[in-house]
Image 1: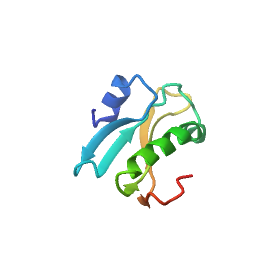
Image 2: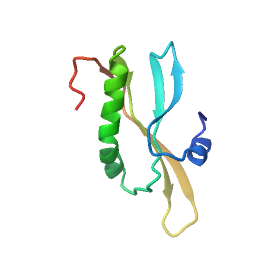
Image 3: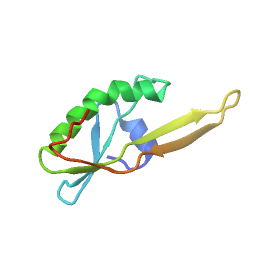
Image 4: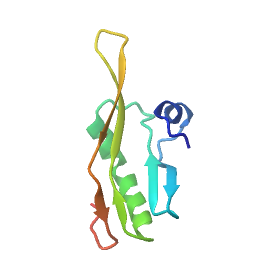
Length: 103
């Protein structure tokens, strides 16, 4: 899967989480989810994605503890102009263990 945001956006046709990277025999994994429904509010997008994300975490944490962060990439349109800007927001890393309550 492409590392570049533009390539990922242009080639992804599903709203499911897609693994984009794996390293260290699967101990480090990266996933991508495209907003194909064009949801304008990021909170709504995250709320809709929550169940699928919890299922993904449950699947991954069965094999080993996970250190994760969430990165939200967005393209903003500046009102009354044709200008678009790419921005990314990333949480700090957190650990997740099999005994943890994922919710």
